Length: 169
View 1: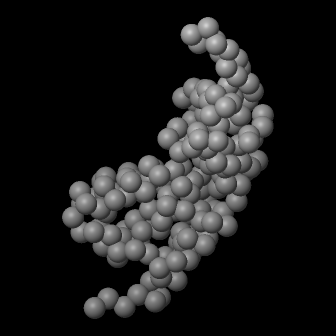
View 2: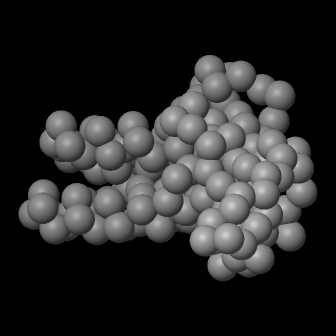
View 3: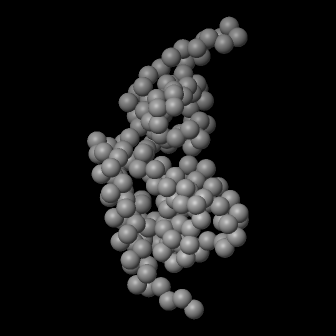
């Protein structure tokens, strides 16, 4: 259950804060809703209270522990065909799951250091980073710039460790 003031992430609409409750009347029936102000300032999401369990909501991350863990795992080698690769990446981004979003950041960062990124790859990498930064910024008092600097450091450290172990054929 969510409460007013909770920092949450909707899998499709992104991060936000539960700001209150509102009763809406539709077809003669009154139904209470949670109001979630989206962090990217695109509006307010209204979710019926009786549908909150199925609303694709989760608590926002408040630290970088998951990011550090995923970055430490061996990067996946992404497909060379850009359409196949980008479709795979977009599916992970659209999952809204922080572990999968972090995998996108890790794998594209690895590809950037060991090969080439297309313009679309760079946009997808930036999107993954922005999602992680935005979510953690929502859940903490740290600035987005501070969080991005921290995540950039985690990525750089992880890529250096992976490069040390990298032995191309």
